[in-house]
Structure formats: structure tokens, C-alpha cells
Amino acid sequence: MFAIQPYEIGILLRKLRVANRFSQQHVANHLNLSRNSYANWENGRTEITLTNLDKICSFYGLKPEEFFASPVKQKKV
Image (cartoon, rainbow, N blue to C red; front, side, top):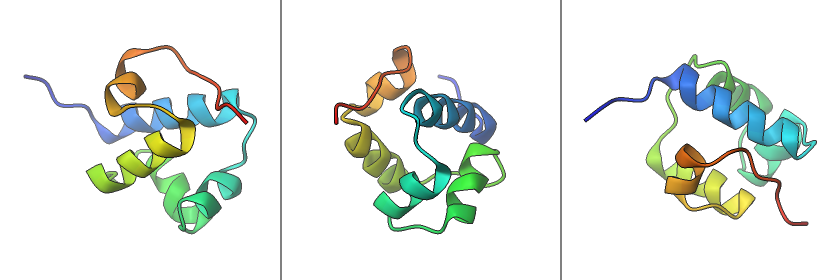
């Protein structure tokens, strides 16, 4: 088994957000977070909880396994 580091999740979060042309503030608002809290995830400063990861996946229309396994997808608007 392997562990994924916070900075690796942050890279995935940023790529997904940028591919969808969203600001950090936009994503944070949908997750009911401050922009700073969201930015800390992207920068690998804080770990994301499974609950919040699930919220992000739901926001982008992804299953958690898709978040980790597939190339960056754009949200269907």
C-alpha cells in the first residue's frame, strides 16, 4: 500500500481547478470554505479530509477513484 502526500493531492486539485477555469475562491465558495483553507490544500500545507475530498469529487462530478486515476476532467456545466 502507498500513501499520497498532501502536496500530490494539491497538484491534482490545482490541475482540476485550472482546467475548469475556476478561481480558488469559486471552488472554496462551493465547498463552504475560506479561500485560504482551500489554497492550503493546493499548496500541500494542510491535509484534506476524506469528507472534503468527497465534496470536491462531487463538485466536479467525479468518483474518488477517478480523481486519483484519470487525467484532469472538466466539470460539466
